[in-house]
Length: 396
Image (cartoon, rainbow, N blue to C red; front, side, top):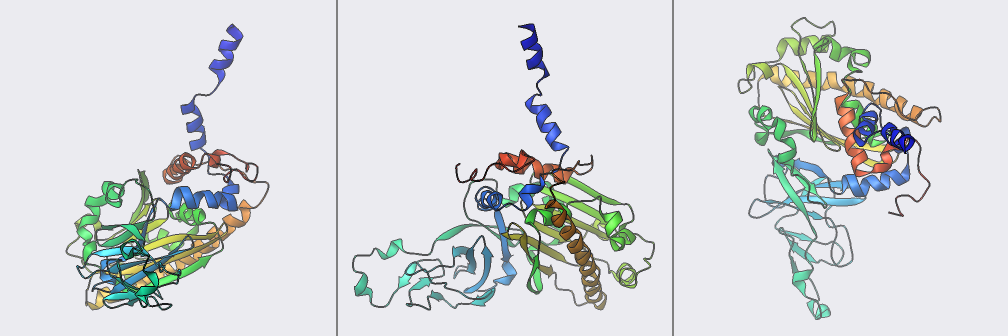
């Protein structure tokens, strides 16, 4: 009996097991496994909030924006009452795609190009040719299929399913510090761009929230921030930040950005020369600069292919200096993006090696730890160092 008691005492507690898991990265196999991606689609992405556009992208009734996500096409359209609504981009008659392109104007109604079934901007089926052909049909039951919509500080989010926290709840820890940026008043700078990367979507997010690589792999950011780059994780959001140094950079674009960044009078002093980054669970990032705001969205296309969807937004400002620093911001961050592309491709290649299972996490890698905890909670197999037998997800 005493030996049995000692054996039980030697077993690690749940808390000990969680602490041990917290010290390790997620396992390599989940960064290239098709079945794990299928689980992520159902347990991570379908219940998640996804940003589609800003209200300024759909300023008038009939203006729409689309999003291709998880094999679905979704659109957000401004209604006659100016409310944004989201629907699956699928006709209820024969499943034809209704609206084309990343953005457009459909007028006061949405007309299917196949059989001319017609929908109001509120999604109701309001007309169809040859109505007598469908005498048995209850027209009120064949409106467009809606998605849940939330507008957070001007950005329009949609959710396919689920009843988790709203975007405002998720962003609450940082809402007060975002308030001075007047996000509701932003307008697009350019258009949405799509960049494909030969990596798993998690590698994009892991790299974004990884502060330890800045001093090694991003000499430009190091020249701008020195060693003053911070990282923290609070609930559903990771935050990274760095303040611009007064010492002029040796790089021309960086030095000119430092010199000509104009005063932004609506920002508090501590934010006038601060670059901050916010990553919202699971795959959305906002880069918040004094001169502009960018969003980046990592969309999984396959276990080893991701599309990065991004666009910049600004507050109208015709000052010559502001126009210049926005261009310089693009030059600086274009190089950072190319550096990150090379890094995440290195990591993706290495994760295919049988020699690698998991890696140790440092004390400051709080964002990677937080992400790992949530992944293991939603998909317990993420705690396994090696993949389970095929069919594990379909059997659940």
